[in-house]
Length: 186
Image (cartoon, rainbow, N blue to C red; front, side, top):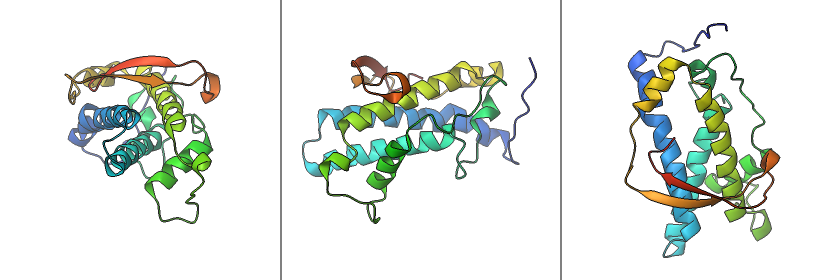
């Protein structure tokens, strides 16, 4: 097996360590916990909007990382063996568009049509797709980065949520899958 040469661009090792030990686990935890809160519904529309927008924001950050987006300073392959290849199409463009519209309200693409909004079945599909791609990334971490991942901060590790995630092959919704998540889980 060939050795993967990281492509870090003059980034100090301490910053790289913080990405895998703190920032990526934070994004994953916040995505999971805000999804759980949004699915339970907030006590009022303001709180509910905060949960949904928080979920969308953390999804977008993870998608940007996993797709090696232009705005992300880190390539997911920087942490993996050569078996891992970036899949820029791991999530449907329509879901990304809905996420972006949820976050960037003041666009000409904003809709009042409830069928076109980012809604619970979209949330669950998005979470399932990100979890699947993130799991694929984790399975391909080099031993050095896998060890650092094990040393990651576990935000609210005492919090346990059960989330219903629905997605089948290719992201299509199918029978529900129940996932018990502690916010510090991978």
